[in-house]
Amino acid sequence: MRTGLDWQRVQALVAAERASYITRNPESARLAGQAAQHLLFGVPMHWMNDWSTPFPLTVRDASGARFRDADDHEYIDFCLGDTGAMFGHAPLAVATAIARQSARGYTAMLPSEDAGPVAAELARRFGLPYWQFALSASDANRFVLRWLRAATGRSKVLVFNGCYHGTVDDVFVDLVGGVPMQRDSLLGQVHTLTDHTVVVEFNDLPALEAALKQGDIACVLAEPVMTNIGMVLPQPGYWEAAQQLIKRHGALLVIDETHTISSGMGGYARAHGMTPDALVVGKPIGGGIPCAVYGFTEEVAHRVEHAKRSAPPGHSGIGTTLSANMFAMAAMRANLKQVMTEAAYQHMFALASQLADGLRASIARHQLPWCVTQVGARTEFQFSAAAPRNGSEAGAIMDSELEQAIHLYLLNRGLLITPFHNMLLVCPATTDADVSALVIAFDAVLRELV
Ligand code: PMP
View: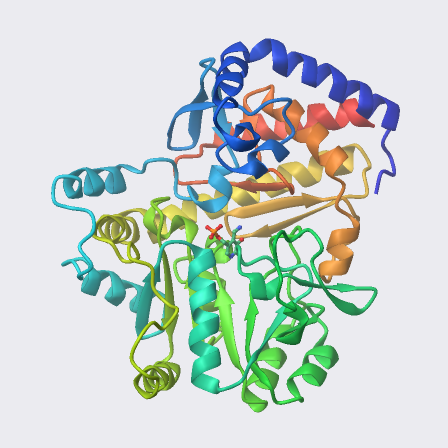
């Protein structure tokens, strides 16, 4: 993993970059100190402390592919809110729609005029006829698991080792030395998650078949490409065979496109001819306004409706008051119709390819045993010569110290990439020059590290 690197130079670089960050960002430091008086952990979300920086950078404003911090530095943003802003910060069509909606009410526990058109557009794009809404992809995944357990009468969920689908307790089960184990970092979890969650490695058809054969799996919840432990691509033919197995054993397939919506208008599944029973998208679907969607096939929709009608009246455990609110609906309608367009995708694909090629050339120039994976508008460099084939392989090549050294170097030069892995997104507002700036800085940091 650290082959080809001079680790003493890496450590010296980190020390110098941390000092430079502190000098460069006095206002962010002051604001972080002030906020710490009343924010638990000093930040609005505890994980905001896990970035590579000595104290959090405070954002002042963001537009398109750029944002400015409290010290008035401008950044080219290749993180884009870890996909929430995949179509750019504050896209004009969404800004206009929510400005209009801002004078017309936000939430009323009733459908707005946008609800029907949004669902119709989702059906057209994703090829699934029936839709529901949630406030986040975490919630959407949680609700889909409930619907499908209820609809199938089966209790178990199958996930892939190393997956992430948001704060969905059910899926925090890992394979540790081949044994399913509840993730030990989970706080306050008192249920035995391994009772109802089955975990297998991605790209392992025999393991998938053995699990499905038990006949108790309601659904497989999967990203079509794993993206949260570094990217792991499906092997050729994997999903064709996996889908047949899932169907043969009476389970359902839920595809979580929250990150792989980078693949095109209808997500990775549509682009690659997959036919999931249910599909989830969150984060960028409303241009970054909190909302998420999930859709079902006709057949699953019937089973779900039957489950609801057969249940006693009362709480379903699926809902939340603000889901499908008027504000989010207006944002989704504008975003789907005017921002997430084919032209936008074509621009993003071309730039992501340019970026991936640039990173590969730089890696080759410095003779590092690293690889680069691209899934539409999403690009990632990983610290192994061969792309990982499953979560265990992907987890084994992660190196947070090395990652943070690179991220901090780039940040100090006005370039933000996604924390906690090495993911880069481009948006409709990203330019050729932005990509070149990243590639040049990446080459410069590699020169420092080898
Ligand atoms: N699904 C996937 C694939 C994700 O990567 C994430 C978040 N990274 C989620 C769901 C959850 O999204 P949120 O945090 O917005 O609920």
